[in-house]
Image (cartoon, rainbow, N blue to C red):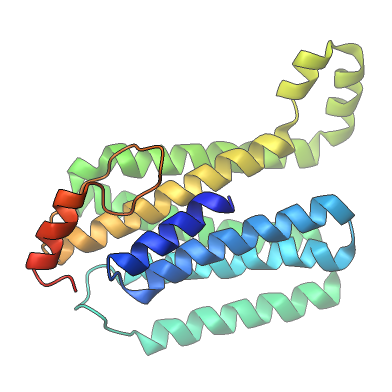
Length: 231
């Protein structure tokens, strides 16, 4: 959740992508760093560094998804204001009430918004993106489900692991799976959002699995994009 998004941000800068996609990658890195700091220290301040960036990064994702069919480098100030205000309200309320359920509900609302928007895109706009879209959603939602199962049945799972061999106990560490799956799902979601955007701008993007993360695929595709006015 830290290194791959950094590669994505660097590649996005090289490819001349719009800044909101660079911000998406960097926001995912911040979430990973915050989670790392919290699990190392278990301090309240580090918990905030873990949880609040989850809200902020999702707001960036929402902005990207709802602006993917606009002219290049356009800025929707009304949507920006709404999302910034939402983030500010959630931050202030969460600092005041310190209730994890509140954070989970607010985060769930943002995720639900992304799910609806993604389903709309792969159903009515670009149905050939269903593979990437549904893969990112499925992986993320599976992690989200495991996270909630771990929250609800934490004591039961802990007692179960004490009776089972270590190898089985590891597989029931649903909180760990939550980090792995949501990190991967979020990264794929950024690719899905970016793919949708570049298709609308009439570029020729290609998603390719590689050992080194690349935003747009092969060098050949980046040259095509450059010729078509990407830079």
